[in-house]
Amino acid sequence: MRNKYLLILSVSSLLAFSGTSFGQAPNLGTASSFALFTANGAFTNIGASTVRGDVGTNVGTFSGLSISTPIPGPGTVFGAIRLPGSTEADQAATDVTNAYSSLNSVACTTTILPELGGQTLTPGVSCQSTATATSLNGTLTLSGAGIYIIKLNSALTTGTSSSVVLTNGAPSIMCIFR
Image (cartoon, rainbow, N blue to C red; front, top):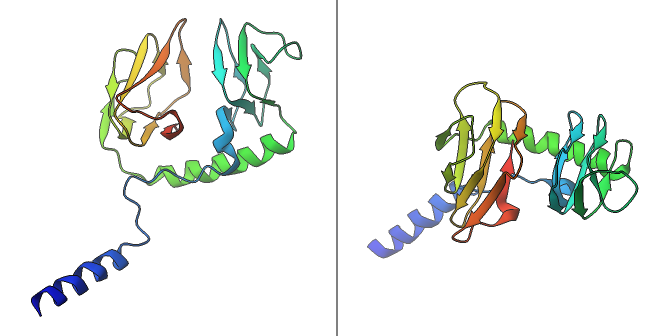
C-alpha cells in the first residue's frame, strides 16, 4: 500500500511540473539554422573568420563575410547569407525576438566577467552582473555536455584570433548568446 502511495505521489509531482522546463533550450524556430544572426543592427566582420552555418541580419548593413564573390570580405561562410528583406531573415528576426523574450525570465546560475577571454564556463545560464561592454579577446571555453545560455548586457566585440572552444562534450547547437 505504501508503494502505491509513493507511485501516486511521484506521478502527481511529475504532472504538476509538466509545463516547467529544467535546463531546456528556448525554441529558436527558423533562427536555429543560423550560426550568427542579429535582429537589431548591422553585422560587420573584420579579419579572417570562418563561420559554419547560415549568417544574417534583419536590419542594417552586412559586411566582411562572403560565400564566394557576392559580398567581398575577409571572412568565409560555409552556409547561406541572409540579408535584410529576405523571407528567411524576416522570419528569423521574429523567432529571435520570441526566444529573447523567453530568455529574459531564465534565472542566472553563474556570473561572468565582461571580458570573456580566459574564462571556462560549464552548462547553465551565465550572466553579466552589470551593463558593461562585452569583449572576447582570446579563448572562451565551454566545458561539458548540456545547454549554455550566455546573457550579455551589451553588444559582443571579438578580437583577432578569438575563439569559442568546446570541450568535454559541449555541443555547438546548445550554445545561445543573448
